[in-house]
Length: 260
Image (tube, rainbow, N blue to C red):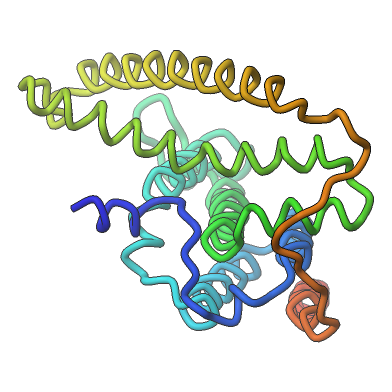
């Protein structure tokens, strides 16, 4: 049971895949390249192509099961759908359908999917980075390009706490279910449950932050300007193929948009 939950979460797993072997900063730059392209695209088709590309890359090059991708992305996909529906009604344009006081416009139907893919693709690419990158390797690679190790350690902690937060949410949800406070009730009750989730996570997060800060002070973290690492990583120029292919794909999509 615990192993299944771990596989479904935002946890790094070394599956000996191609994405696992890539240099961490290359994958980080890959996420930024994807994000930049998504904000340049003017057509939802381009966003859909990038969504499918990232999904196939995650499953084929990252060996990430589709069940894990779907299980971890459900909330983000729901938020993306809500954002898309919001633009259906909020964007000005020619009215196509009236639902009471609300009106769906032609421009809203066009812009809504664009914003959906902007959110979902960036989050999916970020999840691929987390699933295939050891946070320690990312921290070491950041220090090699001149980032102070204190800042790199802050990134390490942020990524380290993500799966812990998800486990706490699962634990609180299980506790409420055992006490008969099921999440299958109405929206109002679900909203109150999420308020309790957020309060519990916030308190536990503050406790973890205080404990971590005390532990770092006791170990004199930050006393010396440099640090040594047990495990070293090395950059391979062939890793840049991922960025090159992504840039070529994004450029091609932008050119096709302008031509069409």
